Image (cartoon, rainbow, N blue to C red):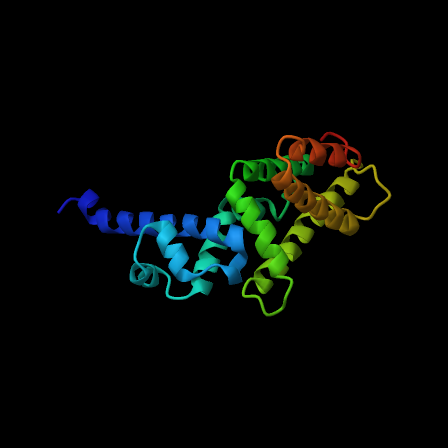
Length: 204
């Protein structure tokens, strides 16, 4: 049996799981985690309810898969740049993160999902609460380290401390993304982020 034949069932399974998660993005983005039903998600994915349960036995498993799908690029970038290698100009690190944010605009379904779920997940009982709490902590550490490194290089032109700047940056990005979903022609996410960062960082 050839190697390509051996990979067949696995490739098919991966494709089905991907289709389910993409259907889940639409469902969660429209109605939130609690409003979506497993039967509706199965229908959107074009499979039976039993088939859905074979791949994802619980709705919480779907949620985890969707969050991982959303973070495929962003998490990889954070993990690779999180240490902020001293040999790398932190301006380039911030530019890379802006590129990730801009890429999100090409996936409006995932952005809408984030806005809906992050709002729901403020409740400690929500299954994504810990995910978002950890996510925001990681982002604050990332931006704080970047701004601190810029301050050491004399490239930070703001009296605001790095930790507060990090919190403000995340709030700006989240707010812009939410506004963009309401008015995609008027709200310019990348331009607004760059202008904000240019006001506190030399070289953005």
